[in-house]
Length: 306
Length: 334
Image (cartoon, rainbow over all chains, first blue to last red; front, top):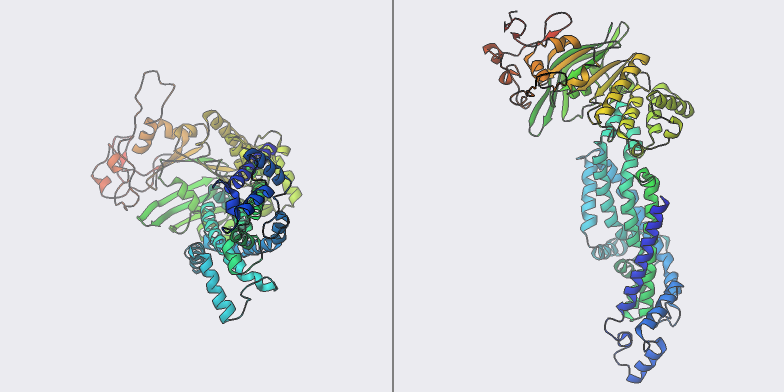
C-alpha cells in the first residue's frame, strides 16, 4: 500500500509541475506578457518600465526558473491591482470558498445518498421517482439560471434568504444548494445503480442464506460495497467545488476564490490569476490523494493489493 | 434412517416479460438423516430452483412458489418450510440448513474479513458474543483445513485461492451445526485436483458432524464416490431416483442412460465415442402435456406423447418417471 501511495504522490508532483509550466506559458502565448497585462492606453515608456519591473525583458528560461522557484515557496509576485503579494490575497478568500463547498457537498450527500439508497431498495416506488426526477433536474439545469431564479423566488419574492453576500448564517444556503445540486443528482443516480447491482450479487445471496435480517444485510453487506464508488465521486466533485465556482460566487456576490478569479481576470491581474490557478491545482491534487486514501480504507482489495 | 426433509409436489414458476417459466413442475423427494443425496441434471432442469424455493431464496418477483409442501422433520415433529414466515425461515437458513454455492469468488463479500463473514452467522443463530464467535470461527477454519486460522481470520476473500475460499464457504455452511448442508455445484468452478480435496472435505465433515448433504451437480462423475442416492432431474421434474450403485449399474430412465453414456471413461479398453444426448432440453416457457423427454427419447411411444409420466416405484428404494420398462424392453403396465 505504501508503494501505491508513493506512486500517487509522485504522479501528483509531476502533474503540479505540468500545471506550473502551463500557467507560466499561458500569459506568454502572445509573445509579450506586458501588452496583455497593461492597459491599451499605456505609452511605450510605461510599457518598457513595466517590462523592466516585472523582469519580462530577461531570457524566458531565466524568467521560468524565477517563476518556478517563486511558486515553490508560494511567491507569485505582487498582485497588479492590490499591489500586495498574490498568494495571501487568495488565502484570504479560501475560508469562504471552503464553507460554500463543504455546505454544498453536505447538502448533496445528505439528500442524494438516502434518496439513491431508497430508490435502489425499492425501484419503481414513489420515492424512487422523486429521486430520479431530482437527479435529472440536478444534472441538467444550468446553475447560473437556477441561481437567478432562486434569488428571484426565495430572496426577492418570499424573502426567506438573503439574495447575496456572506454576512448572515443563512447566506450560504442558496449558493451552496445551487453548487451542490449537480453532485446531488450524480449521487442519487450512482447510489441507486450501485445498490441495484450489489443487491443481486452472489455474496448477498450468501448473506440471505445465513439467515441474516434484511436490515443487517443492507447496512453491512450492501452499503459497504456501495460506499466504494461513492467515495471516488464525492472526492472528485468536492475538488471541483473547492476550485471555486466562478458563476455561483459571482451571482451571489460570495467573497470566495471564484469571485476573486473573475475579478482578477477582469483587471488583467495575471500574477493573481496565476496564484489562484496553481493554488487550486494543489488543493485538487491533495484532495485526490485523500480520496485514494479513503478508498483504500474502505476497500481491502486496494489496501492489500490484489 | 429417519427422514429429515420431505418435499411433495413442489411447483415454482417465474413470471417474466417473456412469459411464464415453468422451472419446477411437481418435484417430490425425501432426504434421510446423515445421507448424501445428489441432485443431477443439466442446466435449467430446476435443481437449484428446487432448493432455493424450499428456503425462500428465489427472487420474488418474478419467482413464485405455486404449490407444494416441504416438511422439515425434528424428531416426530414436522414443519412446512413453504408455510413459514420470513422470520421463521431466517432461523432455519444458516441455523439448521447451511449453503455452499458454486462460485466461491463471487459468493463472499469482498469488503468484509472472512472471519467476520463466518462469525456473524454464529452471533445470529447461536447468540454467541463477539469473542466466543471469534474463537469458534478460528476452530471452524481449522476444521475445514485452512492453515494458520488465527492469522487468516483477519484476511479478506481476495487473499485466498479459489479452493481456500470454497473451504471458507463450507465453514460458513457448517458454522451453526446444521442438520442439512445444501451444496450447489460446489466444485464446478474449481480445478480438478481442488475438486477432489473439496469432495474429501465434505465426506470427512459429514463423518465428524453427521449432517445430511444435498449435492446439486451436473457432473455424474463426481457423484459416484460421494452420494448415497441420486435424484435425476429433467425439465423441472424428477426423472429417476435410486441408490447410487443401482443407478450406475442399471439406469431405469432413458435420460439417465443418456447421461451415463455421455460420461467419459478412463477404464474402458476399446476406444469409444463420447455419446451425447440428441436434441435440446424442453423450453420451459411452454407448459407440457407429455413427457418432457419424449422428443429426445429413442424409446418413446404413443403414450409418452399423451400424458406426463409420474414417479412410480421401480425396484427396491427406487422410483422412475417413465412409461417404458427398460429392464424388460417393453412398455410398462400399471
